[in-house]
Amino acid sequence: MTLSRMLTTAAAVMLLFGAAQAFAADAPQSNMEIVREALRADKKALIASNIQLTDAEAKAFWPVYDKYEKDLLTANNKLYQVIEEYALDYNKNKLTDKKALDLVHRYLSAEEARTKVRSSYLKDFSKVLTGLKVARFYQIENKLDAVVRYEMAGQIPLVKQ
Image 1 (tube, rainbow, N blue to C red):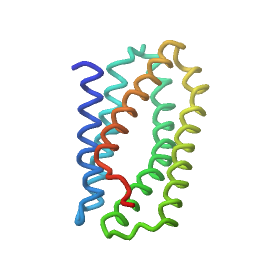
Image 2 (cartoon, rainbow, N blue to C red):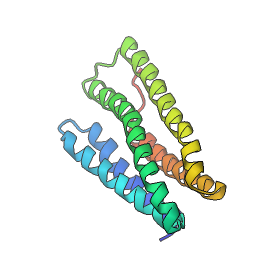
Image 3 (spheres, rainbow, N blue to C red):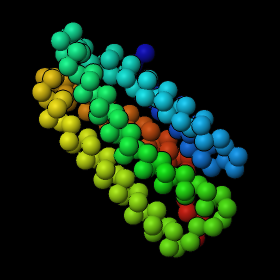
């Protein structure tokens, strides 16, 4: 399976299930977390299969990657919380101007946190991988992120005016 196809499949499953559930009236919260956990496992396998690591590189890379993912998860949770709150208010037809602005501010803050995490690990990844492998890792991250965002945009309805 190609990188492109793996990215699309993993992201589509996660978002079609997760984002759609956020807008379903009776969606169990635990289902979204199960899908997010599966995506993280798929992401790790995707990275492993697309960055040919030597044994020494793998030994040094995966602990850094695991810490990175943990920090990224914290930032992503802020984003998912904003989406879930939006879904709740959207579904109840109770989104006010004040709440909408609050959600936008929190969304931008979550995006900033995600960017900070990604930037802060560049030095750590550069210590354990070659520049080309670091670049490839970030390319994979960006491609996966683009697919996830595309799928998410298709699942989240626009604010009602």
